[in-house]
Length: 372
Image (cartoon, rainbow, N blue to C red; front, side):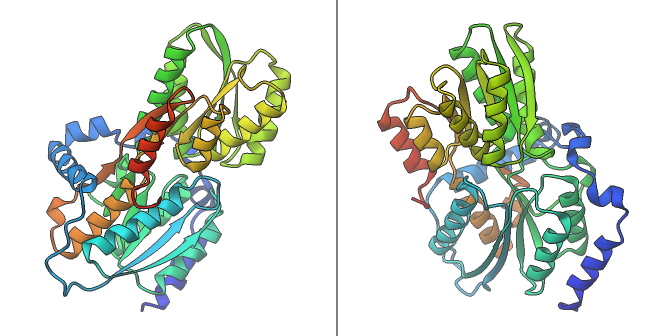
């Protein structure tokens, strides 16, 4: 049965109506997800669990007292083929925290491009499922991901950890994945919006560069757009979907800067987008005149920020996501599921090009405590 399931899984997806398999969250709204404040209001116990679990994540590892626990077999499928180092650092932090906890484990990883086609991702899932992992760490951006995850939840094995999403899917009801983990996109977007409005009070035009037409672009883009829409002095003149692709972002920004020579700011929804936009700004000789932001505060972004090529970034305390997954797996193996919240959302720090190096170095030590 273990070998038969991947074939049946592929067959099921091949039989899906095209509209289901190819639709995207771009056609839906963020109302399909529980925003964290609403989720905690509806389920106050989850707020308490989340607060206690966050203390566990931010503290040092406490080795388990049951050395006879079975090893955890963990499969990872990440869109890590991009400049952003978030995904690779996530695995490093996961493994090192498991080591400190004294949990034996086997991790198999497959990296993809962002927005990989459903058939390719289905094949990857089928491949990792052959080994019958205990846990599958995946992501959710477009509706085709949702279809895959729903089938796995219904199957009951492996336990699903959804990475880079902290807003539970409403219509899954009680049939939720094992764990959501990441850094709340809307919170990060609002931090950048607050910084822009505080440091750039002058009237100006701006543009938004989204990634793919999906959940992440909406969750990062819409809060920023809405914050700017409340201020008459800020005028949106263009928006682009450039994928999470540095070269596409650079080419689109190059064209945009020709069309709008007085543009003030480009809001970038990811690391790769930010670096491509910054490259275009520099090539046009507009560094210091046209600004853009980073997203996530990884190594490449911090280098650009220190050089003055990025105005600011919202920096994730990155390794907490890997630590959170390790702690959840550890508690689950110890039959302490009642101590695991449904969602872990890590913290951010707003970093600007005006910040002193000692502050940036201290944030790097915190953010990359396992993946230095």
